Image (cartoon, rainbow, N blue to C red):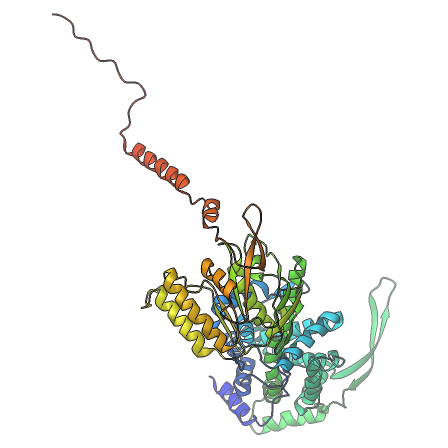
Length: 574
């Protein structure tokens, strides 16, 4: 760092007595600043001096870890939360797509609040944005302007090579415009968006804001010149007279001409070579030290606006696909009721989502799902996990209507991952995930298990399955489990040894294809033979392919012969 930069940085450290503006928190009932203010302020100051800080500022926001009751390691990977954010949560303003901090969105959605008031706080913001088009446009414009300001900090080099002082004045203009936009554009908001107005008004009352406004006013309006212009018949100026010149004497930065000359003469007399640029550089640097604390919360504002604007864009995009979304009704003791539930991850596949509806009874605790392979069981379980994550995060959920229980944890096991270094086989890994389930989950929580005990023989698998069901009953939590142990599932259906059990099966069409709907009961068959035939895995078809291949290979090994053989020579008598 050069001496000038070091001196400026040292001056800024001494000026940290200035407190940051109130945190415009749009995610929590109790407003908080999730960022490290001193770290962010240092990055802004160094960027103002010319250091590129794009990765640093993005990393600061992505590194914000919300307080969480949920352990993201127990569900995020199996639900493909990152993929959902990447594929569905885009941000477009006036046709332009803006890059979002996907890691920050992942942190938010991986830590759903368990406080119902926090969930409703977020839902009210989304409702107001959906109901008030003007307010939505103001939120989008605020996001764009904050993005522009932070972009100036992230990559300041190109501007500084042209005119460093103009660049720094542009930073002040952009910052002032954002503060004014916050104070004036959200004053009438009834949801948590009103915090933007409160923060903007508080910033306006600070000495730093007044100094910044006076400087920009003086830079824009140093003097007022009144002229008289005479134009001839040919349209050209024939005469121009200056009638009056008035300096902006009311501005605190105004100095009379004689004082300006006196300061320059005095500096020259004492042997100092002080140019206007040096003075302006020092003035802008000292002023930024005062202003920087007010800019720290803008980094958080950008991330919080991304949460709501991408959620709004998600719902809008699903509407264009003919799929309805809603804000879920959550609460302690509520049952699961879903209308037209769909899996948004299917939008990236060739098969479009097939919405279905589910309704749990009041005492329903464990749901067993059976049906054919490729019938939609895994996608259903994935949908249930995603709707709980999004719903409890206060976001739109992929359903036309949704009532969800408020849970304090989520355990999802859908994807069987292989690791070259793992020491256990499939059964051992099954035991490990079962142990992890019951040593980590509390009450109330939601457990989602796909193909439980599929890694061992049916007899031992059923014994383990029975153990899991009895422990789930003791844990007193909601669970959704899929299985291909159909005889065992039918016995559970008939005998009901575990309280609160319900059974869903994939609805099958007359042609034995799946309708991707779910009805009460236990499936009679997994339709393995039909699935094999549909996918071309039959003995006859594969045997024919093998024979064709063998014949082709034999033909390739034979020597080449001419189409017709020459006639042998005939022997003659001597």
